[in-house]
Length: 186
Image (cartoon, rainbow, N blue to C red; front, side, top):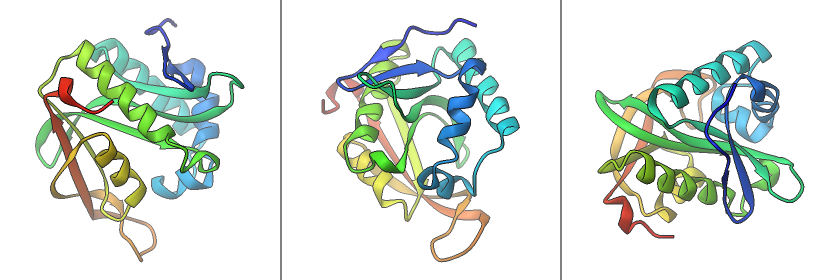
């Protein structure tokens, strides 16, 4: 299956997720730092289904998710990218990222986010891009702010609630957006 050409950042090689990346997607979601935000670890079947959905996004929308590898070592660092989604009843191009815990605090999420914003701007040229996360996910919120995104408000969605076990249907999320992409920080 062919997809978009890889995108290269200063430290990363970003490869489009398709079914050939199922094992890496599964491995990524076994990482405790990522699994904690997704209600537990993914099964291989779930990873295969998500890889197929992500590949469909690349075909249908020209945007999608990448697996991020270290350019020098080839080590799996994380994933990120863009998708079309509905947040609190509004359609957005949404960006996101997930980085293995061993790589936290090194700027990889911001690097993936910047590459995603640039790619979305080049491919779609949309006026607004959004990102959202559980309100207590301070690391992702800090990345959004480093990307020049502004806090829009709180929305409710299925997710985690600080101090409570399990996934909740009405969890508070922080919604951020950025307009006029060409003015975003580099």
